[in-house]
Length: 108
Image (cartoon, rainbow, N blue to C red; front, side, top):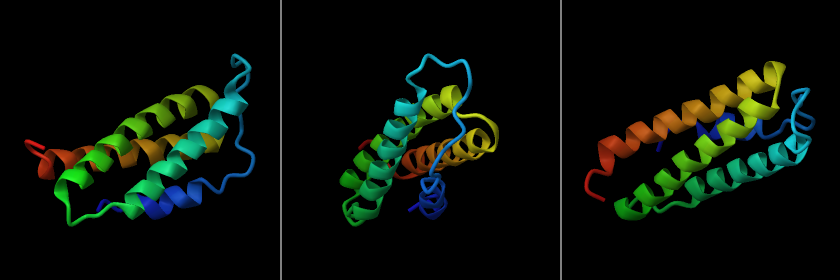
């Protein structure tokens, strides 16, 4: 399994992220939802049965989709170091799992 789970858990510990100014007013809620989505995706990865390749590939694909959605929110709504760290984490995770899918999930 890719190595991005533990750093992502640390990132989710952000209590009060720096919300970008000039947003549409939904950013505080959107960031909370994105953090919840990220947490759920990590929980699913931890609970995945890695002995079943088909199920693993399905969970990994869902994870990649979730990380892309979370990255869109972080890119739009966070600022400063939180934005940089958040985007690096979710984009790194998305890339790592996308590579794992290409390598292990051919035809599934």
